[in-house]
Image 1 (tube, helix red, strand yellow):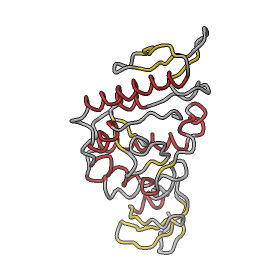
Image 2 (tube, helix red, strand yellow):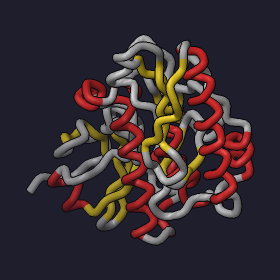
Image 3 (cartoon, one colour):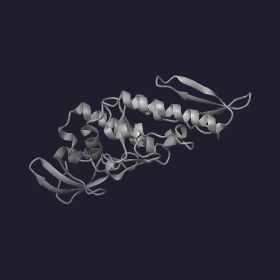
Image 4 (spheres, one colour):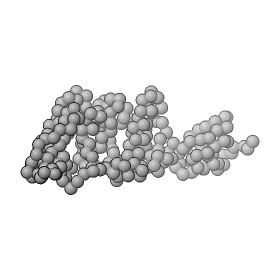
Length: 249
């Protein structure tokens, strides 16, 4: 059994090399070479290399778990939900296989402070306007936004978030909500407050059809805002009431 000495360079099982920088009876303090992160373990864990670098960027090459400074005293179930939400955010931004199926997430990024799970968990757990099952939305407050960050994101119920989403996978060159009729002219189509697809009428021009879609869609969004007014954040409510459908959406 090798003696652990200060200054030793050793190899961990999963996090690269670390240096022994201090020791007390039964405890060893180490510093990881790659990140400079320091932590203390039992000597048997150090000897086996069974140690963890909490600053290692192991989530898509950018995200790291942090040292537990925020989550260590929080309920495990709540931390697990925050972790699931955090992982999902990174998957949307950096999973190339997902981008082939959902191209709208391509080129989205996560802000530097949310690389650290401790920072994201603080946002998630302390948000007074987040309920279980709600989804993280990045582009209600800032239309067209591609960055997940504390200043651009809000949590929304799936009912609202689903109404805001647009399906660009099978879009034609026509404006959103507009379709060409085989008999000539154009029709507008949109989901109503109950998410039922509604034909809004037949129109001579695509602009007329789009105007019908725009008015109907905006009324649906406003109605949902009113339905959820007592639960969603004031910022989200204001953005929903001012929501504007653009012809370029």
